[in-house]
Length: 359
Image (cartoon, rainbow, N blue to C red):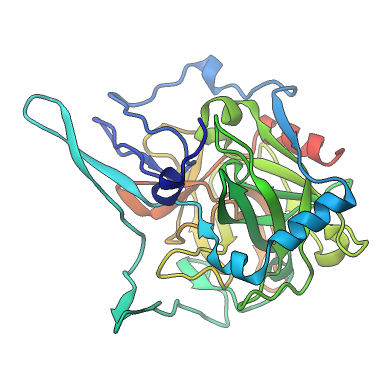
């Protein structure tokens, strides 16, 4: 499916008859589920190593200059967050038929509007990192303030923002993000894809802007927008003669790790009450998807659209800002806006990473 502007701007997903809809995992085709998803043992297996879909992005110096020139400060400021949070509310009438009314909903407090000017409520911040928070400003600095950044991309002619993070790789060029920040599930690939590590309020780019060289997603994401595989690896071009790893450093990455445990998640949420200008984090223990619809794990988190693709880390040290990436922000359920879900990094993610670090 090729994305339309209304779909990306509103990203409506239809709530199922027997349970909540997945909201914002990807800007993909609406669907209705009449019963809980039950996967067979075969379906639970990860795809074969070769089940990777790739796109060559920018390689020539001319292509890189074109993409860098595209992202003017004005375009960056106007780019929209790919939605996590909008929904198409549905109910079941007396005849068992779906009925409903489309209504756009957001996460967190509504912005205050006075004299036609929207005011965004300041978010919580603490100089001392918290081990449990559903959303606070990260003001401690450390490695994570450089390795996490904003992604700017174009899908179907519309400019959007996501989040991403650098990871340690053989080629020193790999960042990890959400699949829907690179490819519209069954639809098209992103254009003008760039990564701004350590993005600073006001559009400052202290470490430069890195264009995508090659982009990779798993087959189940590309074919059917399977939320369990909402993962992408992107190999970047150098900026100013430097690999991204040399410019800002990297975080470790792990696959097939134990489930559960304490996690810190980072990103640049851009829908109110956030504005995309500051690095936000959530922290707490993760749990399995209670609906059994995905293999994802959930983290208490009120981050909004724009945080998609932001790294989740285990073994995170708040003093150094270092940890091990084990997932990324992916989606929320329509009946639980305080929990963010992220895909489990199993064999499919490992295969993606192995391909990207050799690219």
